[in-house]
Amino acid sequence: MIPRDAAQPHRVASSLELFFDLVFVVAVSIASAQLHHALSEGHLQHGIISYAMLFFAIWWAWMNFTWFATAFDTDDWLYRVTTIVQMSGVLVLAAGIPSAFEHGHFGLVVIGYVVMRIAMVAQWLRASRAAGPLRQATRRYAFGIAAVQVLWILFLLVPDGPFQLVAFAAFALLEMSIPVFAEHERQTPWHPHHITERYGLFTLIVLGESLLASANAIIEALHEAESFVPFISISVLTLVVTASLWWIYFWPEHHRAVGSFGSSLRYGYTHYLIFAAAAAFSAGIEVELDVLTGKSELSSTAASFTVTVPIAVFLLGVWWVAIRRSADRVVNTVVPIGAVLVLLDPILPVPVALTAVIMVIIVVFLVLHPPVPEKKAAVIENA
Image (cartoon, rainbow, N blue to C red):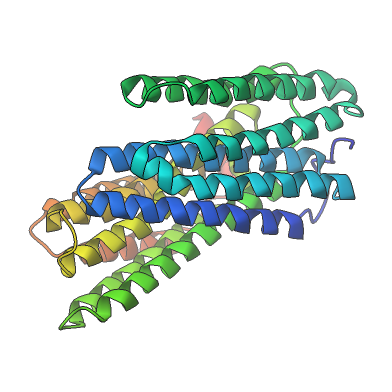
């Protein structure tokens, strides 16, 4: 398992990586569904905090494997088996999400997460045998991940309440500090096109899951409503917004955003917000449908925020890590302002359909102002 060539031509995602993503989307779908129920029942704080905690486990395990694979993927039988072990951990974690949401019981979630992370320790230890000058970095990864897993097991002993939240935040920060600790002297290689393709593919899958969840909710609601007109507007809003999110995400060349170790950390960590927002968008659409059918405890204004907040977070996240460096001043003005307008849509004296209009306007500006060439973007950034 020697380090991969970071300049390898035509490096693309493997079928194993795509299979790996599909298993993770099972967990994302369950987390999104639980968020929908919590929000619709009026448990806003509990729902948002639980979702943020559980999505961290999903995202961090996925991201760690993705960056490891771009550096050391051998696709031999042992690598495949170890990866499938991680996938089994995802399924265990997914099975524990409802209990964590409803009762604060994180036992299955922690077991599934630790299974994924211990398999990752085995991968790093295997890579260390032939890593050469990167041996210290690979061993630091293995040691750091293993040490934090002990803390996650102890997390199960922390009583539910503020102390549990503090412990989670502390342990999550330790997890996120491992790459900095491991690679501050010498970085493992990453393939810019491959790594950004992996993020793009996962974004596509999450957006597709949002469409599927929203469509299923609309079909179910149609059987209980007297008029289908409101559901047509929700359907149009969902499709237009999802298509706009796709268009906006893939407008810039993402590989330009991971040119250095610092920028790669920024890119990877900000995608926690991007992925979580994309998955939460479908939960917001389902909450809107619950309001229409009289099943939600939320007001129409509060329900609208469950849609607009994820959209705004997604827009600002993508703008920050990918669009900003590739755009001219017009686009760098329109996208953040558009995100703010989307966020404020529920309190403006106009229908929620304004969100779709704003998203289309942003896309139009992107079409009229294509990404600036890479050299020019570097000059603008330096200036």
